[in-house]
Length: 456
Ligand code: F0G
Image (tube, rainbow, N blue to C red):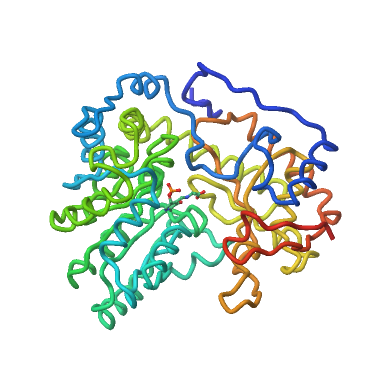
């Protein structure tokens, strides 16, 4: 007998209470936070879907491993265990631990980039872009065209436009010190990249003698999508698929706060020994000695165990299916979102849901506020508040007005998802009443973190 209910592939050993509040309480809390969910106290939130980064639950095995952490300054046993776990998956020769993903980016770009350089990617994540721009270089997004059509259903909307990459490498080779590919494509809806695309990008880079790096934050989710969707991979294990993905790369940056299943950590890995040496020297300046890289020995243990657990088929099935299940519930009630659902998040299409709110009254921000007031759920706006401010001081609408519902790993159960679907159904029923907002404090840099608003 085939049973269809997706049950969480774990039982719960430690619990952390979440706090129920009233609608009135949340209205006051939100007003006090200047109508900015980033400024709420986490205690006042029932279900927190702000990010999947560092917010996951660790296993009893990871916690037990932490007691085994070797806190030696240099050459700790925990480093060698961590290094072996990273090498098993990536096959890359040199592994540098870092305190999180952006530290790996900073070391890599600090070593490889100079002003005027260009770094192509399917879509750069904000910190990647910021670290490249900090070097005076250009972060160039070249996703496939369908990535920009929210309703278009395709298996690998995270792919890079290889024709565009080829043109760039032919015409501007001298300005391109490396090419990156982000798996899965977070800023593009959490969509996966196909093995064919990874291989294709790698072949182009090799033909032009340019190093090819993966931004590997969600490599296991990407491997699972390849297993489900790409011909020839159905019978392969997620580990074998991940190993093939990395076999095409010359290096990677990684935030272990995602598919490392840890609350903190990351790494930089590569095959080029001379480059590794330069990166290690830079690492010592900011992160620490290269066998701990800004982490405690126990963090290295947690990541080593997390990397083993993240490629478990039952886990990945539950993980991807949970988000897909929320998508099915949204289909049933007619709430628009980026299709198909991504690996770590569902991205609500607020412009489609709230056409009565113009972009300059920030429909996605307004939807995120309503989600909190009505349901106690926190999500993040990815729209004109985050991206509308232009370098020349003007305002322009973002390409899309999205609310990202990111799922922390192994934290919430199906009943939390059912509750969320119920809240969204309610919001959809009263959507004409949802009002836009006015930005009353508009900080010039990364304004979504600290901006303040008034209700329209
Ligand atoms: N690359 C990608 C694709 C990411 O999603 C992130 C973080 C990073 C790099 C940076 O890693 O946070 O460890 O320094 N994304 C989080 C998010 C913050 O909410 O999507 P980090």
